[in-house]
Image 1 (cartoon, rainbow, N blue to C red):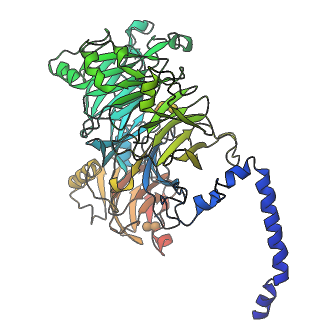
Image 2: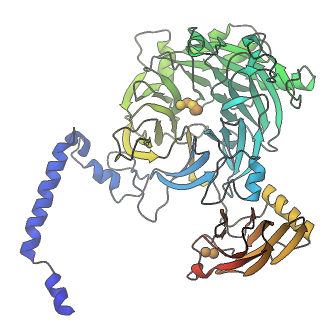
Length: 638
Ligand code: RUQ
Ligand code: CUA
């Protein structure tokens, strides 16, 4: 044994050539990369790789004043990134700057890992619709910054707004939005957890009950206000054009919606016909006064008061002309400007929010609220801010991020000799959304920028026809933007916000509060059991059976239960382990049944008992050295 080991030790002479070969090889590889010299060496000759992957802790400024994107093992990120998941129907939580994916929150889609969309409580919430399209994530605010309470996200596919609690990072409410299709832009009020405004992107006949199918004048779209606390729909404003992205001011007075189809077209040519569309500005207190005074119409089932604002500018809504088919609207961290990205115009339009009072009062024309319109490139979509007066606009067609200065853009509006453009940085490729650390708050800190690119093309190993997206991390702490990381993402994040980590306080075990527990406590009360101790089968009559089971690592306290073929079986499991990271679960063999039960949580799932026989149920989450032994038998009698 010892002798053999000795033979295995390579001789000194043998290692030297191989090390030389390695060095030669790396030189060759280096030369093969286009622009490798520029990429691998900073101007001071230091290695960029050394800076990015050096031992410095995340966020520590390097010698050149740049930020280090590498977060060493065991160290924590400085920001939570909340990403929407698009067609996956998820929200993803990323660590920034490491770009490590920390969690996926299934929101409106099914998730095999946790059983979301399959377990009883989430099925109740989803109301039978378990696919979706999540685009825009925003957190609740107090006093112009994140209050760490909720994350809101839209479901464009099914016109819904979902809310995630920040302690459990689980959805606790989903609201259907009436009279709407294609719920797209959403934004919460920023002064307090007040309303969440939601835009319908698709115009439909109002009411949409089959009567005005071919009459475009009967089409319209809703700007909907949902109470962020109760998740109730409070009111809607009916508008003639479609409503795309959404924003709110910092005072709780205005909400904004871009419109790319003021023409009211129902096909592509029709939607692009005019050179100007609008930024709609909604006066929220004025709308609420109209609702209170009953100056509303009934649409659909009439359950929500609707203010009809299709008649042109009035005290509720003003239309600011913006070239052409504008997409994003973003408010700068001082709260003074609404920046609208032109999409089909190479410009962004800067609207001064303090002029809107005069617009509503009729003292100035709506267009007079536009105080700058810099040319930023072809296909501007969204804008982020660094809190130092600079803006960063994503440019889809050019595949660049354009950094520009807001004050200079305002000067340039009247003085062509001023150039507000600071830098254009290539991104890869076809960037959609963009956001910067804390950019949507008054605390924008100008550290990191995230560029959500729609195409990754050649940036990663090929993985078949469906490519990952490319979420690129850019250091904006210095004068120049620096690209530091490519982040492949499963389709398709649309938007992301970067939140300082000290603003989020997740719980380690389930707090057993909220509607999930209203639901389970009601069942337990009905059956006269205590969820924390119940291990029994309860016959509910008509072939329905409830099975209460408690789990403590590494066992189900109920190791066996009997049912009859064809019974509708509801298994309600409570995890008694109050230990961080100790999730259990319930999987019933050959019954398509699988769910997670987190520390101190209750969860349940319902299924039909199969053919007579023995079926093992087991805990699918690795929880203990005896995790494999954590199982029991369901005995199905004829
Ligand atoms: S949209 S790529 Cu759904 Cu946010 Cu602008
Ligand atoms: Cu409990 Cu594995």
